[in-house]
Image 1 (spheres, rainbow, N blue to C red):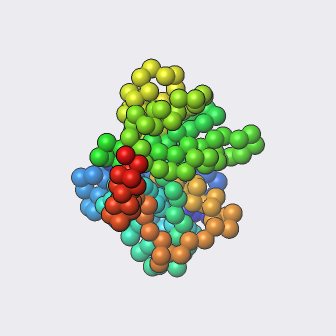
Image 2: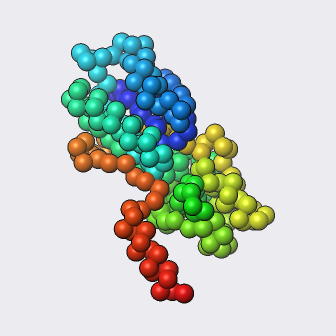
Length: 235
């Protein structure tokens, strides 16, 4: 099985081809400045090198669903959908926080922390359980201010924080011991997206390519208004 992986959630996007024997090749680019101009040539370049195309397409398309860059996610998913439809191949979405938890340095608990702007952090916690390949989600994604998040983490031990808000969390913790993932791991690699997409597909997971949509860092405006009303009631 050959998988095309597309990762456009962060500032440095990329694409990857991965085969069943683990051979992989990546192409990376600046997705903030010229994603529209970079993505298609990067995909075509890999396809040409692997002698793939309309007559012999990859077997699966895997794309990062985010949360992350609003524009990047929409462009990446649109490209993935277009290729999957054109080739008659399945499309699988990979959640960014699940990918981050997989590439985090060794630790029992993993805090995925993403910068949600407006002074808030989008975060969730995974736990590595014995015998499991992938960490398990134990605290669902939510939005918090860094200081409130630090208070919630007061009792945590053996914690690794990963994501582009890791430095903000580290400052809020003010000296509390934790392991911080290197900055180059703040976003998943396109190869990892391809690997996880293949695992999901082989495990029987199927996505509806028509309805599949990106995940965003912030709720809708209606949800934001509801949260503000609830906060006002609590004061």
